[in-house]
Image (cartoon, rainbow, N blue to C red; front, side, top):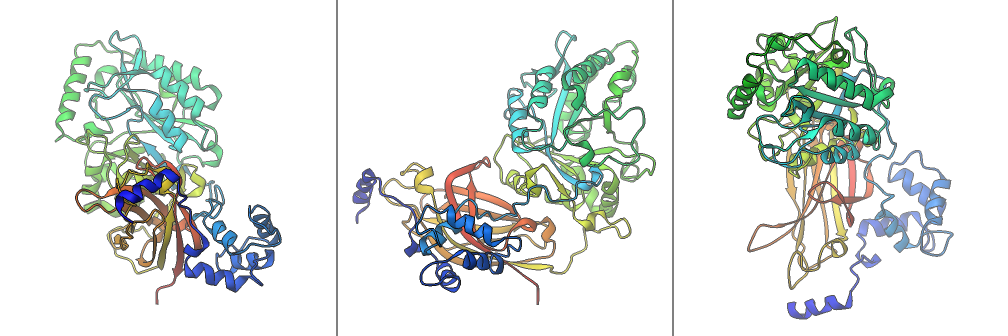
Length: 558
């Protein structure tokens, strides 16, 4: 058929759904193994789910419900096509579906937390609008740490949220707080932390304190006058909002040693911000502190004077939050790796993007997670590959926004050394069978004007340096329902921190290959067996129909 003739075929709305003829041989063989006389009854399906899919908790009644829910007759079992469609259904998820299943009774410092950076920005870091909309979107996605930069408005009588020293248009603090209250627990019951980057005078700190108290009401967690010797557990903080910032100083004594971009002295933007703040505070009379503001702070932030040794010192009498830029963390990791891990066992570490990321791009979060950093602050408004890793990490633990750190990062008797290369723990075998759904989710001329697409899959591991790997399938030409039937093998030293990256492209000989979907899955939560893997768009939103049929198998190293 010529390309022109193929284009004409589109007008007939030809269906590009898979048929049993396209089922992988593995699927056909499994059906034969667990069926009788062309039907897989409840007992056979139950046996398949337990033995092959490793779903040990599944009962015969669960298997019968799958059969009853099938649109295919007869009702006393699945024929091969119904079995194939079940494997490719949304109910056959690649991830464990246990909801929140980590121990949530440990201190807050024992968890990785889904963390936003400059959560109010709609776009770049220089001149985009500030709004509560990206805050709402982040909370809906499961983000648990919202960052607000608070400044006096031009009349010095109200509190605005904006990126200081830039052309970003402000939004009021009150509007941001109201939206946080409304959407805080839409995706998860576990606490939301608001990190405040405070540039206020004491009178405006008092005003901000009143806004926070009146707007958030009973859901605001107020710790009282004592500084925590250990952070509370997540279970005790359910449905609460927590404030984290530096305790206020006297106005004329404020050093303006901000815990984020302004920490990097080499950053030109830092100098501009510092100059603006100096102008703002110049010749002001000494004012009193705002005690009501200080009482709201549950997680005290601050960077001690001195070098890294002082910053990473562990105080047995109190816990705190330290912030480092991505570059500061990289440098600190070279000389103080074990100290960082020791610090993060009790205290909070927040890592934020370097100041030159004016396009709101992100950095590789792995080095921060490997050192136990809880708050790896990301710009959520973009669609870069590092943001996909963040989405992948927090698909774990029921997508509640909190993932318990691996035990090796919490062992106080033997502090983990991130520089030591470890032996293999497991081998993950991944088979990519086939895919479908592009015909329904994309315009029919999106990839090629006159012919079906030429798809290929990239599969790899994001993790510690020893585990990083990326592989590529063959190209399947001219097919909306491509079949690859290829196996890939990954040897993992730290599966607890490994993320499986999956990305589909459409090959283009004359220009850059077209994006056709992606996802990222936490290896520790992948289920064995044959699974339907839904793909996401560049922003991390799930396509309606695009998915891959894949097989996952874990084996021990020989």
